[in-house]
Image (cartoon, rainbow, N blue to C red):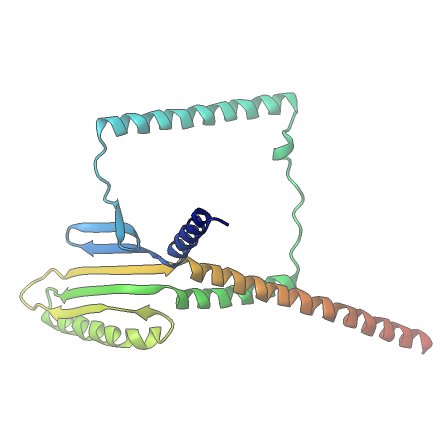
Length: 237
């Protein structure tokens, strides 16, 4: 392989590593100004909500796309009506009989799903968690009680999460205002996940399912043999 080939291979490997190891995530901000939602890939962040107002050119494109979707939907509805009248049914639209799931398979899938959910919560990272609450109400006694309940809940939150969820940075501030009647709340959470962790989840789930299938195949002949022996002993008696 020539030098150019080695360089291209190195660049390809580097791109794959970047794609699989760069953290992808969601950034949610809530404050008095409203809700903001964004997605991030490494240092890049794109805000999805609130959306920026469309330019006249972008609005014209959006209207064209909407018109095309409506035309396709109308043509499909007309085609289905014609097929119903003529009695013809497209081969793709023929309903195939669904295979019934066995109880053992359902229980095994539920167990594997529980394991996958547990692994998923260990996989993602909370890069930043911010919570600013200023408790206030018309009744000072109610304000004091709500402040105490909220402080207790915040103190118990790390113990409930334990080692399951990793939180890199926290900014939690709980206060009370006995002169105001309206509480104030603002928060932010940034959650990220790397693609290689999703691949690990899929591989772990697949390995667990294959192990269950192999174990079940080994247990099935043994169960059939026991049944035959029982039937033979009953006939001898």
